[in-house]
Length: 194
Image 1 (cartoon, one colour):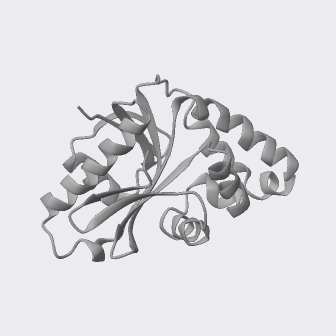
Image 2: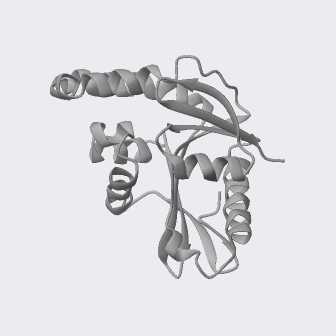
Image 3: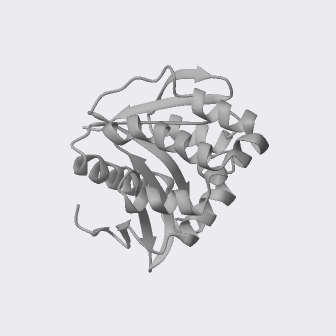
């Protein structure tokens, strides 16, 4: 994927370096992400080794949205890498046992193929979209998601989030994502982009 795509005053940028601010945003906005426990170095190493990819939608060079994704083959690898990391850092397992068990077991019943891309993190900063309609904001974001999917030769995206996250639930329903699984405290949604 080329590093930059533009739609109106927004641009999609693939980020490989200077990830500290992005990681802190994930910790603040999505505290139940497993990457909060695994730490910034694990997150940055996962990006550097191309296990996960980080995209930002920017408006006037400021981050308006953060999107992290993982493809089919890396989705199969990441559980092993997480387990390996935990075994090297057993204190994390002792301190966060319940949290880690809940996060690692949530994907047991999820099966998908190469036509899918897994959306790990999705953060939208509303203040960068207040001058446009909700419909236009959704159209811009969905156009960027289509571009990301195209980069992986994928047509579908799936994700999960904590059922307490009412904002996410509202956003995905409005944008025609379909609920396909509920497990523990997590809702799983998917959408096909044509």
